[in-house]
Length: 101
Image 1 (cartoon, rainbow, N blue to C red):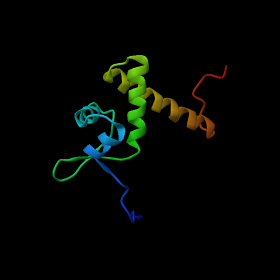
Image 2: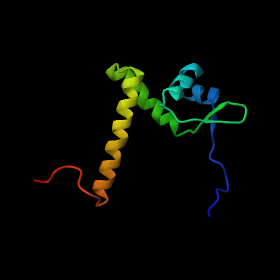
Image 3: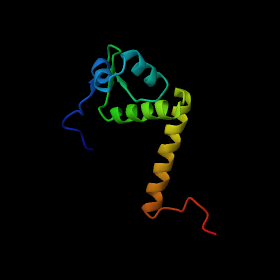
Image 4: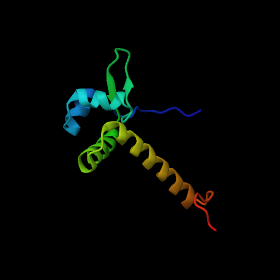
């Protein structure tokens, strides 16, 4: 069994919100809607990985560029993740996901 020697750095809700220039309440809403992944500590405070900043940027682009509501953005993010999985499987020699004939 392998153990991590160091914890990955996490950002507090306020620190994360400041980094992406959003109000902490909006970040909380994104977490509640499942758009962002967050951990809670024993006191119930939210902690987010710095990698989630990329997701926030994607959410903002979809909201601003396509005028999608946050529920629709969740569906789009799920579809984009599924497409990425299928493309990775296809490139890795996995089963074809489109008909060949």
